Picture 1: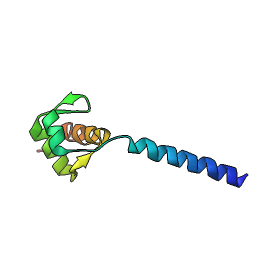
Picture 2 (picture 1 turned 90 degrees about the vertical axis):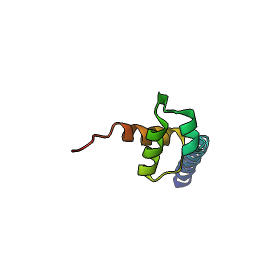
Picture 3 (picture 1 turned 60 degrees about the horizontal axis):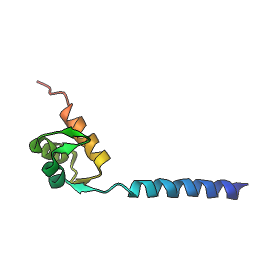
Picture 4 (picture 1 turned 180 degrees about the vertical axis):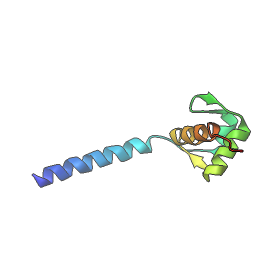
Length: 78
């Protein structure tokens, strides 16, 4: 019983890893050239700034969308 449960857990873990591997990573320059992140248009300067603040040079499209949208929607404090 414990062996079957462990096999199922391993299969789920392998599937999760395989799904994560399907998403390619792209550089900041590639996102800037495209000007689109997460289906939305952003300026090259905003994309560069978002990645710089996050300390990231390469990201998957999902990660990039999260990084840029959080940066773009950040409240500016006076």
